[in-house]
Image 1 (cartoon, rainbow, N blue to C red):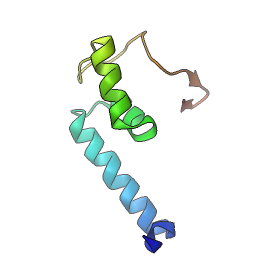
Image 2: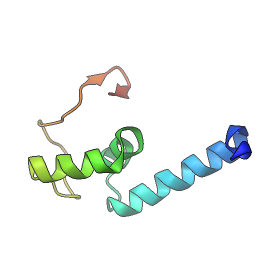
Image 3: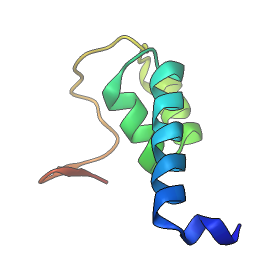
Image 4: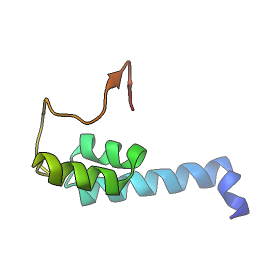
Length: 72
């Protein structure tokens, strides 16, 4: 746990988790990044609620707003 504050360890773990999410969401960058930031549980429930598929490309029904370069 004390190594989590180490920059290299933190980056290594973050990139591992993002790669894992990309595999889980079949390469869908939108879903993987949303899961990274909001949590897999939220994204999975949104997928169920809105009928999203892992292979969707664009949607007008996002449960979050885009501000600049960030998704909230």
